[in-house]
Image (tube, rainbow, N blue to C red; front, side):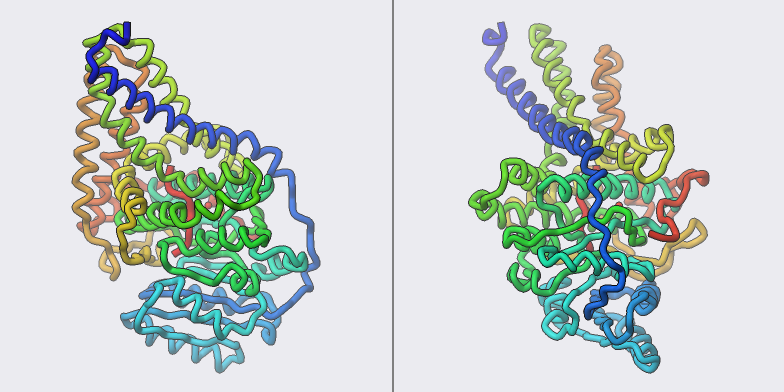
Length: 517
């Protein structure tokens, strides 16, 4: 009966089914990660003596960070570690008065006996990767820890991590990102949930189950020899951390993730800056996929490790697929109502699309692992899903640019020292202007609203939750983009519930996979 349909209907249904099925495959990966998490989380690394104190260099790459650099340097200087074994490099590519500010801070700490140097570049060749590589050539330490400007490492960071390098096969140790300002708004709360899903579930499973994990650009520590064996920092992708991580593990080095060692950081509070961060992460991941897949295919890795690497590096393909599915929803419903004989095929494709939502399960497990209650964990998930759909236009553009090889500059995420709801970034420097790519977001939201009305009036109830997430996410991200560009941090950006507990303990990471600045 299907073969009697017009050729264009058959072609449309085939493409619709292909998109839904590909999304389903990525969704199944999330289910697999959630399934493996319980077993992987029980595989704790061996405890190591905390009195192991080799020479360590702390690298602090910064670029125009006048609001947070003092906090960063103070935290690095306050690390609980023998002063004679500690060196701090402030790798400063700033072009504003941050340079003079940093010079004064560094000099003050030097007078107090701290081995700290201020390395300023004027060319920014290689951006962050170039700065790290230049610092590495003169680094004194056998091990190198990296902290971006928005991070505030606890005093015990080195005591909690360096001991693991007594295993000579360990090349890098990554800690979990915490969240200093999670409760600032719905936007920061959604980011926190997405980051927790990446760190507590994905990083744990990959590291404990024989797959490659990645250094997240910050809050981790490297064996210097590992970096050299892998070929050093390279800047032909926007995610130099992911690139180096894979090259190091292909050379045979082992990585270790410590989920219970939390390094807190400031989440982006301004959505246009966040979109730039997501764009960089999405495009950089695809660039790494294009660069590394030939080598991964030839490597003597297990099928599971290769499968995980493929999904890890191509995960941002979900965004163009989501965008396509949303655009195709209204034509699909019209085809269904015009040709009722396709109802079975349409129902199968829709079921695949619905079943692709494996990430909520992963997010739920991560929130439970982070100590949240069952109902609170469930309530947070729709916010993350809607945000991911709202940012689909932004990340689809990044994915396509990464695939096509289009070059772009490294745009860092602005930080404003926003820690509580009383703080504000209005009137501060570095605010990101409204991108013309925000216009398609409101078009997508309007299109989703039209499709939603059609689905409701024609009793296509199965697709209504999916369309509602499209509409809500598109409207939310677009309205925030406009409001934040105009300098209104609270318009369309409700604060997070006050009852929510902080996720960063005093002792002891939808949105894209995570890399540092």
